[in-house]
Image (tube, rainbow, N blue to C red):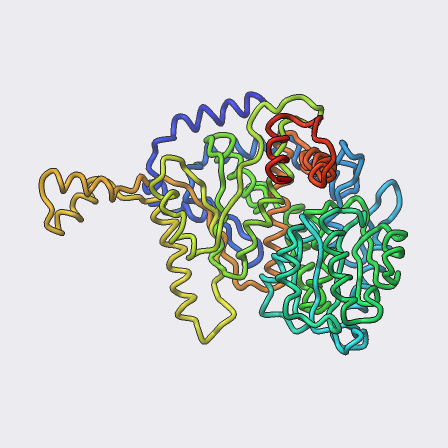
Length: 533
């Protein structure tokens, strides 16, 4: 392994100063440095990866055991070995007739039974067969946090053109302002509340659930009758008063940030209907099958991961900007922040030894074209290189506004071209000379208009943001995280880094209410004194 990393770093050092614009002039480059999945295209030709780098990256993936670990994951083995769990979010979208074994037991019959119950409940709610105490349900509030919120909230917004059910609202933050702003203007008599918490003990979620119950109680006689739960804690949901028929559980082999495909996606299913939700699953399944079957050199998740490894671990670029030129994907960067940073933001390998290279990058972004008027200045002319990942659809959902979509696509392509091409001092000087500037002022003004270029980007193009396409996109990034994690030698499926803060928060709550803070450090005691004063 060490020799593969070294070979990549040595090659990168040799080609680091090579102009990307020269690479992109090569006739076959766009074809050779791209990957397809159905009608979706991933173009990574605007990176400094050449045939040698690609070959070395593919060798790294091979010797890292990506193929073997992939088979183990899909086969139900306990690849999350720090928690002793299988990793089977892919089973949530597995095709009919497939058996998935965990410890020799097929998990699919129970999973399909849960999906059937979800579909019945969603249809009953959408048709009014299941109603609130004031009539047909018109609003649904999903209360969760982390993976119980980011995925469904992102997907619900992404698939807005397919909404034909109740309006969905999402509450996650324990800050009372979040739930207060959501319930303002809603009718408690026609609102369903979904509480999404596997253990039914997540403090932020349960605090908001109690607030929602009190709000419902102002208008309805039996608030619990308008609750559903996504949880495995049957005793706790029953104690809360939620009928078992409206409780949908999922197993511990589905991690929170990978759980959108199952019961955590109940709100999405209610919004778009079981049929469209099935199309969403089919998109994820399509990417799974391609990930399993296609050679690494043509495998979109593998190649996207290898581009990430090249930029972060080989080139040393610490961040990654996700830039969807699709307003309805505005929550995708936040979703990918959790998916990638919680999965691969580790410092130790599977055996507990320190990592020999950097772990995952900082992931951030906003939709275009808004970002162009915010942070693209830094991306184009800042002192740090930020690899960019553009996403854009060939067509939008608004035929009457096709001219606006054309402008959107033009902006997307222009940004990747500008990052690649740049503008030389000679070019900038010529531009300013035409404006009449001369001498020292010409030189000064020209320097401000130089674009370094040689800044890498990828572009993911898809036909239209449909449920099927969204499923493909999410599964693509899930498998990208998996491949990067295997190559880095870490466990992408635990998240011990979130535990310490939770423990300390539980201890601080009574202190803020007046208990002694003597066991806290001086800095924390000073903050407590200020907040209690």
